[in-house]
Length: 140
Image (cartoon, rainbow, N blue to C red):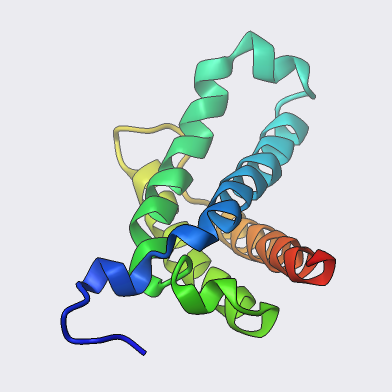
């Protein structure tokens, strides 16, 4: 239980959840990279246009960096069980996805926010985060 002396961030970020954080970032990056490659002619696109690849991923990483700590995806509770961890990841991904798509729709990034892309990123990355976190606790 949080005490009054704990700061907001102390309640939202626990060092013991660092493996979850690393895995989450990898999962988000891998799922989005797979999509980028499939929609741009394959893996060769990733090496031929690394800037295009990264400008697809960066907005979503920004969204995740903002939302995951605020929601508590790395709180002590997130490190205790899949039952607590998976919903926190998914609840973090929903606003992170919206932020990422909003950034992509801005004039600073290419790509836009086609409605089908919204659904695909929301579902595929959300599902992948859930599976990843389930596996973490299954293996423990």
